[in-house]
Length: 243
Length: 376
Image (cartoon, rainbow over all chains, first blue to last red; front, side):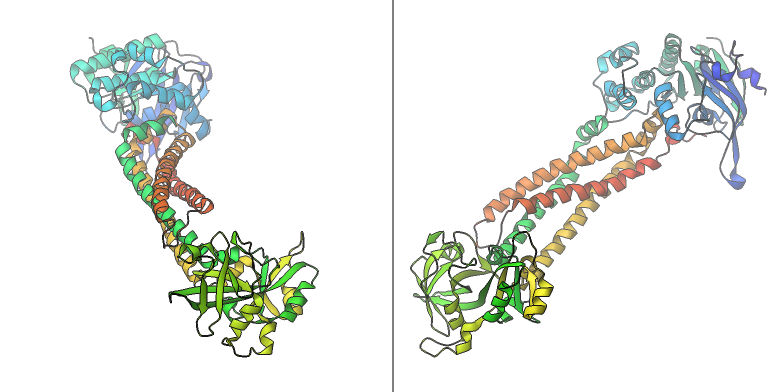
């Protein structure tokens, strides 16, 4: 599949001048010797600010590897990765860690919240790690995701959907350019899944963040601006179901 | 410390358990420290009280029991006194004796024969100073044991009667025996072994056990050169503590127990934080994926360990001090001394932090990719 299939409209400028996420011809192999697997095979992808892109595909197809490369968690064998025009490959490890903190938000499966922290503290921890002036007010953000009444609750006192909302708020609190969402509805029922993805779509547009969501759940795809399909490490345009 | 404090609150029962173990070790350290200080005082407080920089013994005398085996003559005292780096040199007679009171109660004493008026003469806090040939100034602990100024004790075997004329006002003991200071001449008579009424051999009056040396102002004594010139074997005051009976064996045994406790404390803290870090591996992976630096997370972990160690050690030391206060003043050699307890406090926290640091260093190995569930 050619890379042009996975680029957003209007993404024609050079990578270092574009806002949002730009992956160009990225290849990633994992494992050693005979067990080497090509997790990403010449993948190109552009996600513009305010755009929600879903990546679907079977387990082991390379979806999480795509998130790992886009999220500066791993370095590809070849290709380039730019976020808001900044070249991730050229960065040192420490710079990449700092870049993640300031420019990338992660939403993990089941929220992956810190058990000891209240809803509000989950957000404050992210701000504390980043330091400096808060990009967004944690209380306002929790109000935005509908959890203003549960600021003092810890993860074990919240439902799966509530945990995931906090996860989304935590990912947005530092004002990221890129939001990477890993199977956000894997532990939720259908109604909650719809609510979560609606929230993601709304926040993506309101915050102007470029969002990549990997998922198995085809019922939520109608909220997305584009749907891409990952098979055996290659990315292609998928079909976007109607609501 | 954002995360550290909140985790401490959240997992308080787990941290309390670990803190409880550290607190118990701190209690033990205070008790051992008190016992150690008590034994040291019992062993060498009589020596520590002397305004002396070094002692010279008979040539070739081994450190072990040097005070009771060594015999020096007064000519050697004069030779040391004439050296340029020595401000003063005085003879000191030392011997352990058995005696009994007028009511036949047995008394053990360490007789320290000193020249009245010399720098070795103890200040009598109570009663009279040395002067009467058969008057003795005793350690305060003798009076605590029931004797009083004016009482007479008779030295077994030789029959010399000694009258308590004063006390030092504090503990002066040597080899766990109360010190009694007496004029050197009387000490020489008792040391010669001549019973009362018998003739004392003439050379007895030229003998002492050791030579006490004071350095000239701003100088340290060249002991090796002095020994070569005078024909003695000298050692510093601190080194001479080893000459107190049983001192080295007691202190080294207690020291070994303390070292083991320090090691156990560091291991306990290290093991706890190893398990704690392993349990938090996924959470740490998430935080690292979010952009939390290794330094941030390690500082947070160390701050957590420091708080636990500080609180539990303070609690343990407080309990130890309370228990120790009950033992102070009893027959058990026990003394609570701030420097020793302070050192134990600092070492417990310091070594605990080192143990925790080894465990917390695992944070650097946590792979942030694990936050994605390893779905690659």
